[in-house]
Length: 421
Ligand code: AMP
Ligand code: GLY
Image (tube, rainbow, N blue to C red; front, side):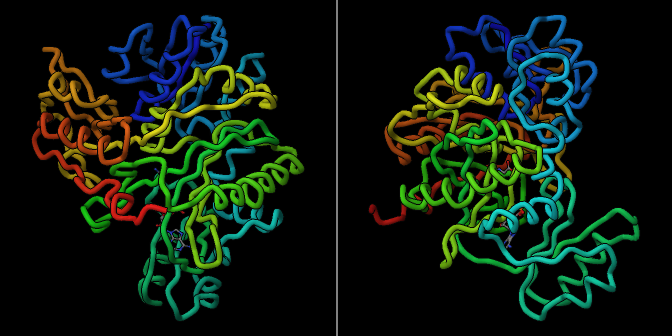
């Protein structure tokens, strides 16, 4: 079987590794991929951007691709899965209409309200006057409605901060919408489920580390590292996520004529009122994919194909015992102004300790590997315990050098400190 994976980051490198487990897969194509992906066996990177829907459909048709897995949100929102399906091809990911659950936070909130899912109270506004009138005195969260690559969320302590955020978002463009949300508190957990429109198979719960600096300080990033499983939520809690969050949302999406197939990512906050949804993503998380796919103990392709065709029943995903950790190595200047071009060294030695998944890398004419994006590498280990996985990952990070590189040494620290249940 020939598989096409769309995207070129650490998540897509993790997908390649997962799909390579399958004896039924003869060849993998990745659009556009990266140098780490290109070095994998049976894998070819093609020079097609992830957002070029027409070229991707053309490629999949000509190469007789039997399964396309879409990594990032942009091609989903552009309708890549709709176009592949219309061409009679199997694609794992939601349609553009279903991807609205990530593409519009207001849409996601309305789906949650209609399905009775616990989430922060909110109001949506098109004008500054209306937002100003609705703004309470206490702490709130201000969000831009559309896709903002993680840059559209402002967690505000004061009314002045909230007003400043609203001014930034409501810049006079008529179609822009801002949300004012009740600010929740608690620990955050990512629950990702493989969905077929009706049913959901859960991956183990994971925890991302969004802040740049140790101790969860500094600016928000795409994610500086992750580990799984997390004991922040127990089996009963996960059961309630399945029963009270995922299934009702899948039912509601289906009843709206947009059944959700693909990876549904629930960003949860574990509040004193129980797990509440902060956001949904219509795709696998990054760097959650790096750890969750590293924990797979089965060939995932049959379940992926089944989800794509709407028939997950009878399939499951199995995971190895132990834990996985991913430490992200980011470029100098990340997240504000990541610098490109630093020469990366030490990967050979590092790979004795960890799987080095590439994100923002590129080869120059001389064949040297360069940093070429914000998040550069995802240093990933599945081990017998979290402590074991982390110590190997950090040892690997110590082997890798590039000018100005940044990584956190406290990924998973909270889990290690938790009293065992
Ligand atoms: P989002 O992109 O909606 O997940 O928001 C990004 C981050 O902002 C989350 O990971 C939380 O840390 C924080 N956040 C979002 N919504 C809320 C909320 N209602 N209350 C508290 N923190 C929030
Ligand atoms: N790790 C957060 C995300 O993928 O959105």
